[in-house]
Structures are given as structure tokens and as C-alpha cells.
Image (cartoon, rainbow, N blue to C red):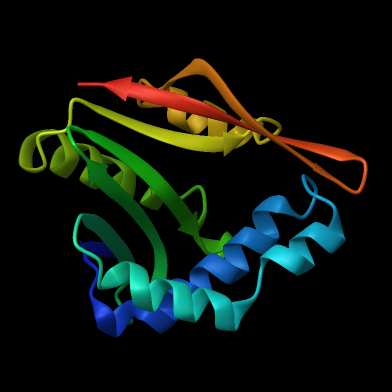
Length: 165
């Protein structure tokens, strides 16, 4: 059993830890190791989430188990009438248990009903097929936009997916 609630400043360390651990596991076979080492730093994530959680317009939901251990989170921001999911991560041992689905459902409800968003978008690594499939189950579709980065002769491509309300 698990629970979901809105995150606050007391969750900075837990969210940073989940982000760090999950990012490493998610991209271990999708991105070069040197890129992962450069981009994934726990102290930087703690600093980043300290700023993010205190920002207005950012909504972050955290999932935790019956032992009050944080296991996953989702975060999005609103700009005008559009919202963008920036992160959805679960600790590897808690994946495929329906927690990501509940986090996504929470974000979709709040974004559409409380934040008056006309759409919800996100960026996902083009080669992360399991994530793309997950998002498609919620009605997200690629809108054709992509962002490319060249890192040590490796092209890293993110695609944008959008769900209209």
C-alpha cells in the first residue's frame, strides 16, 4: 500500500534521492556512462529541489509507503494555460506496482481541474520506449517537436509529448 500527497520543503532530500537513484537506473542502458556521471549529482539535485519546491507555479506530488518511505514523485509547472511535467521518477524496486499510474492520475486531475491547464506536455528520451508507452496510455502523443544534443559522438534526442484537455 502507498499514499500520495503534495510535496513540501521537508521532502527535498527524499525527492533528490529518488531523482538521483531513479535517473541512474532509468538511463543506465540508454545514455553513455560519462554523460550520466556528469548530469547526475546528488548534491546538485538537493540544491535544485530546494529551489523547485519553493517556487510558485510548481506542483510536486510524492508517493510513500506505509513505513513513510518516499518511493516516487511527479512534478509539473504551469505557464499561462499550459502545464509541463518535468519529472516522474520511482525508485527501481517500486516500479511496475501502479504507483507511477497513481502519480500521473494525480497530476492530470490537478492540472486539468485546479490549475485550468488546456494541455499537459512532457519531454522524454526518444529511446526510452517503456516511458513513451506509459505516457501513451494516458493519451499523450508526440507533437513532432524534438530536442537534440550531441555528446561525445552520441546523439541524444528528446521528443515532446502532449495531452490536450
